[in-house]
Length: 91
Image (cartoon, rainbow, N blue to C red; front, side, top):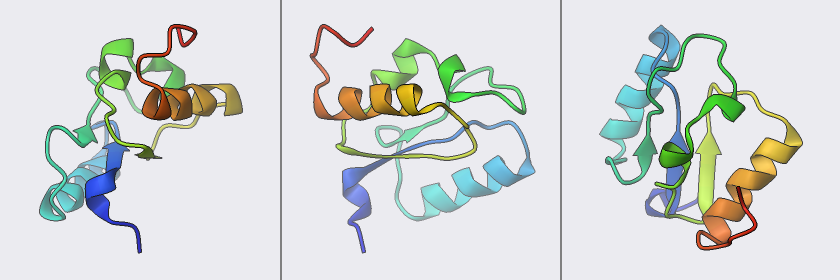
């Protein structure tokens, strides 16, 4: 099992299900550094709508994205941000 201290969780707070996920994450020890709750995300929102400021908060190499569907290109961008946070080609 993966050490949860090496994981950042990205989840919107836009319905009862995501509220429950956030509650469980906090009980498991996810804190503000590793629990990213993008602001102003309505139900049905997509990964592409997460602000760059929220994505820049990713500091771990393992990122779990929950309740935010996205394209392969968007997911690759998150992967690159996690592994190469200073990379100038990620915009």
